[in-house]
Image (cartoon, rainbow, N blue to C red; front, side, top):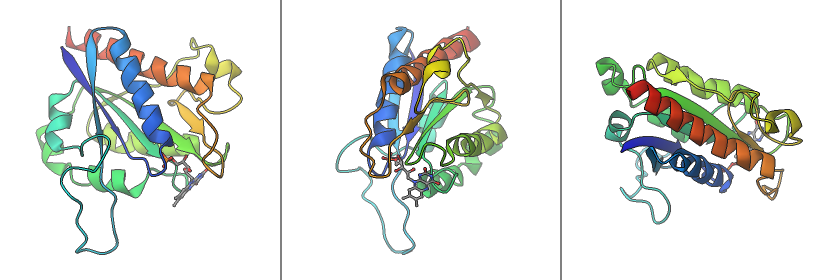
Length: 197
Ligand SMILES: Cc1cc2nc3c(=O)[nH]c(=O)nc-3n(C[C@H](O)[C@H](O)[C@H](O)COP(=O)(O)O)c2cc1C
């Protein structure tokens, strides 16, 4: 069965919850399974090192995860309207597979969470697409045939699912946000299956 990589960074847990929903969506169609991975924090102290396996949660991603999987969903908190540094740091280590063209033609999608409703969700999602386009991936968004895109009063964009977490990060994922995460996972799995046929 095809595997799709759901790769995320999450400091306070919101993007982690979204990643789990996207992964559930990936598996709902019964044609793909999700491989959930995260990245370690980065530090200004060059000597600081993380253990190879995190204490809890998803394992840290390796380049082979990108090579082995048939598609990618990438999730990051909004950081000043951009993707979080740990994820950017990871992408900066992918030259080896970029040179091989290992990701060319694979479908990819993005999702994010931000504290304020208009705090840069769309710009973050677009910033996350840029390295994926350089890798030759086929970007997938959410079409307006998903009714929640019209009715949401919190997160949810055609560029990818989003969550409005609140300044204290205490807003739960709304039903609309949740359904859009699931829809993205399903859509990614459907398109990955069609592309590989
Ligand atoms: C350094 C930093 C920069 C941030 N920048 C923004 C921002 O530009 N806009 C916004 O709405 N929230 C911003 N936030 C808040 C996070 O995006 C928000 O809390 C998010 O839901 C956290 O996701 P997580 O729970 O997966 O870590 C920022 C947080 C940090 C730590």
